[in-house]
Figure 1 (cartoon, rainbow, N blue to C red):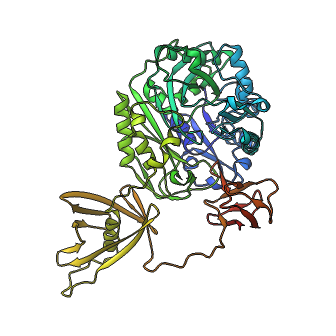
Figure 2: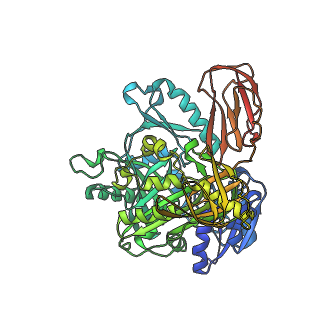
Figure 3: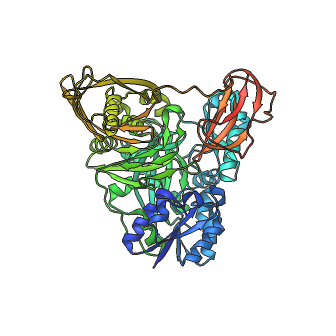
Length: 628
């Protein structure tokens, strides 16, 4: 029996595993980097061990340090979570060699699926349908589009869709460089890219006694940069024949490598996935097997009424599963709340998370109120999960909860999630992996409440005691300026014998935290909170502007500024002062929160200044280069 468990991870997944451990009476051990000294996972664990440094390479990817921490803290088992070392066979062996229990599949099973090319060979031999890799040197126009994909790792890193033959070589090189930086393995391969396909996966749980459960399907088609955003279980609209083949293929994959524990087998489903007029081999394509717990595991837990972490621990202790899995019930939907701005190429955001509350649904998070969102790790703040008897009810419940959520801090994708859940394609289950390519502009179009700036001004004025008593002389009109969704808004109000007033709007109530306005016969409530220059009015974020605008920062024409804080991971080959560049050509790659961002040339010209080198840390707004 496991009595004390170390989670070799951080944030949300560490907190998630600790929650189950506490319920089971297992003591918990956290590891934390210097950047995570005050992180929630380090606070909720019974014991915590410091990993000196801030970057993942110096901390959470140092397997020898984590094993040493487990031994020092008296842990008898290690759970890897997801990401970092969760699919590293060498780390699993090091844990076992130290006499600790490894909560996961065997190192041999991890190795079998660690390389996507090797995994495809194994699955092909097992009769699992898949997309055969292409020879990069033999790709023709007829093969397009193709997908360049890293052999190792995951999370969308090292992936490129190529639709033009003349850019294939460049994208191969870029994907290899990104994969090498992220996983220490720059090998990539090319396979056909299936247009309008759905991403469907099967949850597997297997014990060491020959029992393999296929715990239903999940649809993870709504993705940005090949990373999942919204997931649901079961995958809607699959015909019974397709489901049978998915279960059979997933079970075969698990048995082929003698898998134990929780894992996920991922597929592409082409066509509509439901009709029976085509062969299933044409519609189901093996992608990869993730030899770990998935981020989206809560939707399966909700539908099957199980705790997958508890099952992982039982299997690791040698227990046998029941012969048949529990029966499913209802539908569950999960949305990943990211600190990012979808309208600015998904740019990650940093800063203080003053308040996070999503009432009425399950919320898995690694942050508490007042925590800092830094640049070193993933941009995911939390996962919100709703379960209901039907898909429509689950979607409505989750969208409503996110719509009413209180999120005070950096910009998030909350509004995108609400609009995505309510989009006609999604509600009708007609989505595919290109959903955001088609609809991102509409889903991110600004639509702020027109009365939010007035509510902010009235609450702020009340908070500063500007409505302190009626005066006999008429008060001068007051004005405030706010920035909302990139646009400046100026609002006007005045003091009257009856209280504050504004043209066309009846001010029912004006307090520091609550303003009630009536316009056109409709009364609306506005909850208002201010943190520094940022004002949060219901779901709208406003930036209070000074009364007199400050002069703009002086930057030379053609300046390339860092859109976010991060690390310069590479510079275009041969780029130096004096290099000619074409408009739109990628010049500098920044990495922030596990994502790479290209800085491109704003116009055709010459690099007149280059201010950064690979490995350099930069702040938002830092001058990177100048192109004239």
